[in-house]
Amino acid sequence: MRRFLALMAALLAAMAINAHAFSVCLEDELFVPLTNPDLTKPGHAQILMDMVAQSLGVKITYEIAPWKRCQASVGNGIYDAVLGAGYAGINVQIAVFPMLSEGKPDSAKAVGSVKTMLYRRKGSKADYVNGSFINLNAPVGITSGYQVNMVAVTKGGAQYYDGAKTVEQQVKMLLIDRVAMVAGEPAFTTLVNEKYRDKIESLPVPLSEAHYYLVFSNKYYDSQKDNVDTFWREIARVKNSAEYKRRIK
Image (cartoon, rainbow, N blue to C red; front, side, top):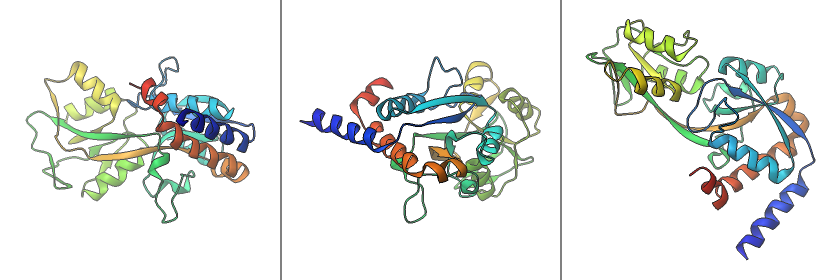
């Protein structure tokens, strides 16, 4: 009976949405475990997207680009959507999030959540205590365009620097003290674990733990509101399905 009801729900959702397609901008760096620019090895969010698209008969085209370009392109309507956007309050002007009536994003429709850890040079006194930065002699490095961490660093009383173009540059700037800390996204964490464990350490408390979403350009949402809302609802359904949990295990 449960399987029958699940199949009926998927069928009704598929009938409710008009056949359509949309383009999705995907960051050109690993964002573990959610996204991977190598489309042959999809992250959890990509697997979720593919399952939803198949359920609803929607065609998705991925475009790979630096994160800042993804944001600018969806803001200008060049791409229809971006996968893996964190809600920062300031980026609602760029794209449309699945929102609740009280003005907060609907986490049930998120594609996943990720912790951002802080890293410092071993021997450094720079620290993050009770939500505030102390003993900083330089800004905190963040990935370019990551607005969730812009807000988090500013809230903690520090300045941020987002001029590094690669995680290798972030590591170099940390080692020569151009930045006091780095808010390490997954690609940074992977690089440190592989090559710099003897020089760089992680703090025990994350800077942020945020939900991440599939967000749409204002242009696309205005023309496809019903389809987009149906796609978001199907994300929430599929995310809780046994088949999705099995596939990402």
